[in-house]
Length: 93
View 1 (spheres, rainbow, N blue to C red):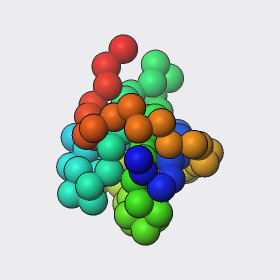
View 2: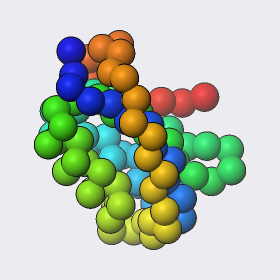
View 3: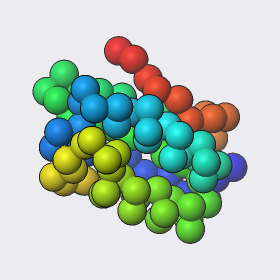
View 4: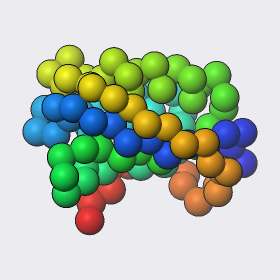
């Protein structure tokens, strides 16, 4: 099971710019599991589980974002890993 987990909400211009796909690629490259999804109000939510150092690198990526995005804020809540996810995927409502 993963060492750490977090839930994050990313605000700014993060929808319609390829943010979810780039986020998925960044997380998969780091070997993390979890998901990313758009919210109804224009933000993006992320659930991520994995090694602490890789999670730190992923958080740095989330704060910077995709080149076409404009990240204004990242609210992070530490969570307990669930082990429920085997890969990182885009979640749809």
